[in-house]
Image (cartoon, rainbow, N blue to C red):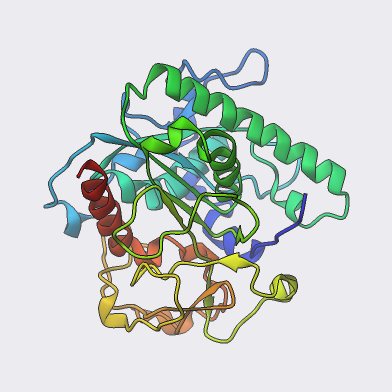
Length: 337
């Protein structure tokens, strides 16, 4: 497997151990008899239309939007197994990791889809964050293979049991985006299911230019059945572990939805949802693409001057929350037409 690294420290800041997750652990007392997920049981879904979960939450300023759910999103959450490594893969019934997943990624990321979609987000035996930077390639690949085995099982169960002919959006962030690309490659590209694909969002992970034979990046905001992806950094910054890419990745500008290098001013940023879920901050930053990356200026929000990172992996979705929400709605409308 060709190795693509992402900003572990930034991810750690978002999904690090915190007492706020401890408070929710009592909600996750289910136990797997064989250590594997059983996707016929709702406990093994971080988000599912047949139960309340944090993906159903809506930021207070956005609650006036009408709800429509004739399309499904299959969302694959990023790495939340970041603490002490007790194995290369998270146990599926770990109450702390499940609480952490639901009240970080599912709340702050998967919720962007809930106005227009039924949200399906499987729990899975995710690879530990160390799998992405260890020297033992075979060990890392084995951990990611287990993660993908679960995602495949979940997706096939979803298709058989829940899809009922609905159009589909595939989405993932970070490790979830890596796995989402594999799902797109195996189940959609040059397959009949491609006709059901509204759009795919693989965020916080590269979209290698040789990944797909026929699936295309969305060239503008008016296409469907295509792919959008970006990785967000401060202007001029290239992490050392990404310098060897040499532009071998497609990138979308989430303010213009183009793949050209034109810059978009912050006036086009309709709203960011950051650490306070019920706050929407408008015009936080503009964006431009270059050499396979998305570049932004330092975001403007209260106390933002204390935020010194140059790597905005943590905010790939949240910095462009409202723009992404509008893009989902627009592409669904175009798909139905």
